[in-house]
Image 1 (cartoon, helix red, strand yellow):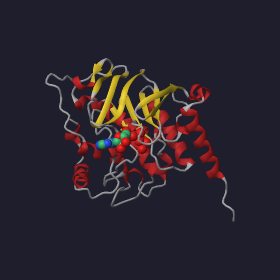
Image 2 (cartoon, rainbow, N blue to C red):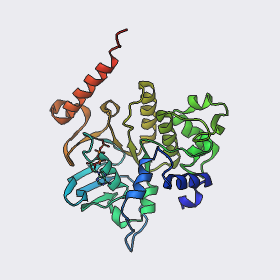
Image 3 (cartoon, helix red, strand yellow):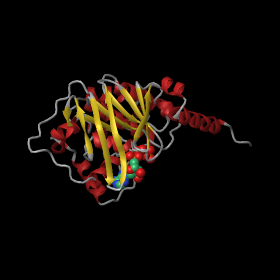
Image 4 (cartoon, rainbow, N blue to C red):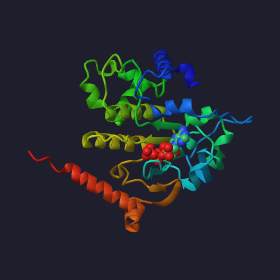
Length: 302
Ligand code: ATP
């Protein structure tokens, strides 16, 4: 259904994207091209998500048979929880998200949302219930208002205004020459990484998915942008199950549960304080990042 309502210029964008002409490729779009064909089960039904509980039951996964990526992952994310996956580069964090969005099926094990195995429901309905805020949001050539409206083409002007406020975009939009009617993208204004991520959050606020996946940008944002994004995430994740991939641990200290992935296994889980008290993987990662932060705050000698 969503495809039917896709704005024409967005389709134009997808076409250009397919030709590989743009450098900034939204992770998930590139995934759509890479992923092997996942098809709906014969008797697949639309999923009904009322609570937003996510379960991984003994999930293992490899892209190539000689290299296991996820190993026997079992976890439960309770309805409305805000959880984060952390761990070194290549640990398998994005792969977990890809499985949840069903870009791939696990090699072993099952994933359930509200008790329904996700390989038994229609992919379209699954994806309608999951909102993604990617690392690098793609904006298409239109106004900033249209870019936000893409989250829900049936949204009213009032809905869009609310989304702008809750995504902390109001001050930014007030400075634009034509406000929400300002053109963005290739032909118009260029947005910073943080501003683009807030546009993605505004889109997600309009979509109101019961489950939210947030892929934190790896490139460092200035602390002002980071604060705005954190506030916006807190808004959008209220009353939703939110799953974050976090690179900067400072952004997830308030998560209900932090899962620490190491070489495809969950080696620790708990909240920030519990994991610090454990004084193992997470505590080490935290220490390293704290040192890096302090180091980057030391002013250069004149
Ligand atoms: P990062 O923090 O750097 O984003 P990550 O924890 O999200 O890392 P993944 O992207 O899940 O890690 O990757 C886990 C492993 O799977 C990596 O070794 C990666 O090279 C490999 N991998 C990822 N995508 C593919 C693919 N499409 N085909 C083959 N191997 C892949």
